[in-house]
Length: 288
Image (cartoon, rainbow, N blue to C red; front, side, top):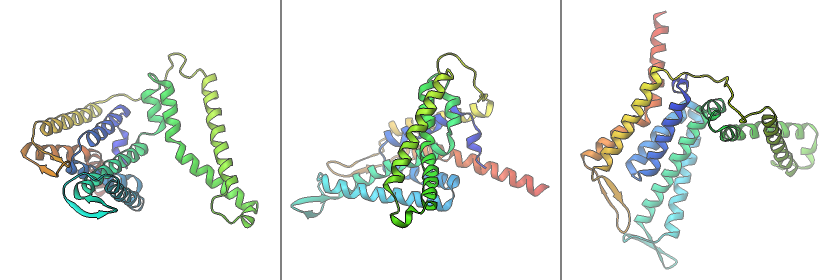
């Protein structure tokens, strides 16, 4: 049960936009860590523990890769660990690369949860009346990867049944790749032409995806705005933050600690709503 996905698409889109903006604009190690843990837990809730663990592990490998690459190409900083090819590898470069990696990992996790909740139907409901071309393109992009997986499985099965795999025991055949690309381009072209001749986006049209903005949507929207505004205000007016270059320095005061708590609450909103609904249903079932 995913209660968060039942809210109005505008509120869900606004929440993910605010979460992504906070993670990108505030380059703080504590906020990046809070975002990573929160988004990983939510991703595991949506996709399952095993799949979520695998994706989080890939993100951590990406963090390690960013750390190593930054340490090799960036040589700023004063705390030298060792010399490599006559060039210093510093602690500051390692920390900066790690933070950059966590920033990218948080972005991937946010987009992963966004893709699972903001379906193409919700995107069409939200943007079709204002930006019809963008809504159609974005909805097609959201369904592209799952469609590629389904089409590839069908092509592989057809290729296997035809007996060609015995002559070419490779895992990925050039013919299958060519057929997959051609099938994808053909489907996209057919869909675009079909929507054009149906009059999509040419005039004001009614939508079958009617969603009313209710009281609970307004309450969630207000909660997101209040937590984000209060957290940003506390952080901006505090002395908290981290400077990496030319030397590493971190400071946290009361305002920064309050901002961390508020941002943690903001990132945990989807899980709080889902857990609350799970507990409510458990009580109802136990009373039957």
